[in-house]
Length: 200
Image (cartoon, rainbow, N blue to C red; front, side, top):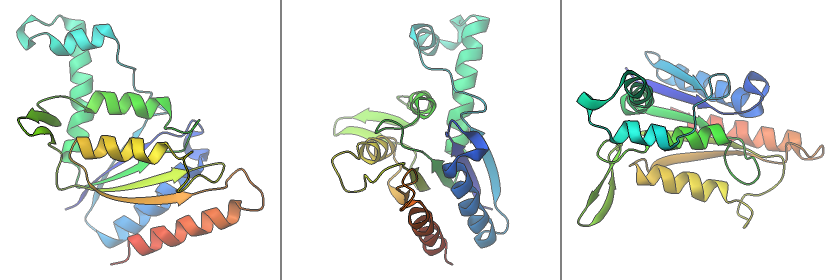
């Protein structure tokens, strides 16, 4: 059975185009893997807290010395990590906001990047520990950025994912969504890519 983790981050929740395209992708994946199980994490409907000094202190405090609040903090981060550890396939829906990812997705990244758990440092440099996973990245944009210097989103996301061991990444772009003459073309291209990438 394939375990699929779906992570949404649009501030428009279910109205967002990244959410709607993720629906289409998930449906295709479930048709391909009929016994798949989908776990959903909507970062806008249940926002991930940003890491702060107290959270880092909780993570660095030994298990037996954590107070109740610190135990809850670590348990929350552990749950996020367990979701991605258990997944065979990850669908990441990431609209471009101000040339990067939504802040809630950055917060999610910060929680799942943990030394000794999702990556480790070796004498040859850092090594990602979340290997053997397939990731589909849906990137929706109001303008046209693919292949341009303004696309700082994709290098950031792929660098982070590679760092934690996820290198099998397919990117689905939907561009020009705020441009009336290009919107439908952008969505059509995204749907064609979804069809191609999920073909058996």
